[in-house]
Image (tube, rainbow, N blue to C red; front, side, top):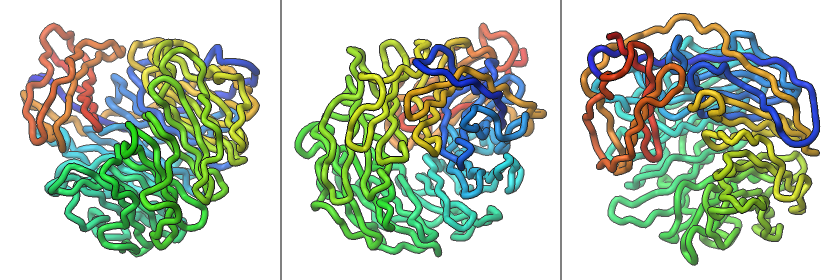
Length: 547
């Protein structure tokens, strides 16, 4: 942008009113955000018996970029104040927020944001906040800094530590190539381990963003894809970090799969016995197969060396949950249809392969949550008519809802993949972003019972958020650093959510880049938002054209 611009970022939240129940498919949806501006990147997690807690990103003219947090009861009623709960202020927000419910009806929230360094927009750090069951912030205003090391920290995962605090794991660019670090925050938000985090793996490897679960003993189990500095093939590794921050397994992690064929980031869930089940996509026999491995609490493998075959592929969009019986349930798509499979504690595949979806359209971006009885509720996106569908898969692989899936939202304007969380019974909360009103994105949600019953719409307006703080003048250029070569695209929106600039993706090399800001020529004075998209990260911000 030119020197006639100001870049601001803040974080905020909201409330909702109760719906009445109805049966059948969705005709209207819960609006979770005020229609002004843009709302994107919703994430929802199960809370206590009251329901779920969700976060999303607001792009509003009054407050810049805000992250909202709200607790939603099963009835649809707001559990927190009419003004919602705020996570604090920042200048650059990388991706959305991540969260985990605490043990008492509140939640720990983490986000990656920057201090507004005009020389590097991707100077991004890790912050966290703890909200109690009433939505009050328990830690420092603006969140506690978890890692403020120079360069970019991103893809932060957060889990409970079992003692009133949380453990965070993130990908960090402070060295030659990405490495994963971790930090434990006590109940007061104070760091319990080394300032700016403990290195998880000492081996000379570049590492994919991490997946993490609590180990049940005050520590965390982490999995990642490691790439040796001297060769292209990548392997899957895991490490257990104890409550004192030290590794419990080999300093370089234990190898989960040493076949040079793993694809993407591994996922892991608890096996309920102090160990974990790890799943990944693998091309050793055919393109994009799915493999999994179970490990004990000491890191030793339980199933066959290099994992057991879950599906012969092809596959994309892998998701996984534990089945509550020592095994796991996975969902994925083959580019056209969505599938689910259950693997037992001994590594046996339990369900026959049969598509959950029946539409001739391409269906993908599946997510799943438990039904509380070793089955799952799976939701996915129909890419052609931009609708959301779901299916309740029982513990033996049967379908409890309409063959081909229940239509959860059919407005034909879905902006991104849905997020799903259990309602602590046999149903689920589903939330997503769509652009039915402003062409850019509002947040909507549904509660779906285990029998497929849904509820009528209600609205969650944004509460008061106060003044924008910490404005910073921007220079003629923007600077950012890419950890690897990727395509980068720039989009600009006005305050109503209308897209006013949409640059096609351009291939850029790894390293620092200096590019001109989007010129204000032809733009009226006012508030605008930019979205700088790359793979796998993106950055968002706000600027003001003064004249």
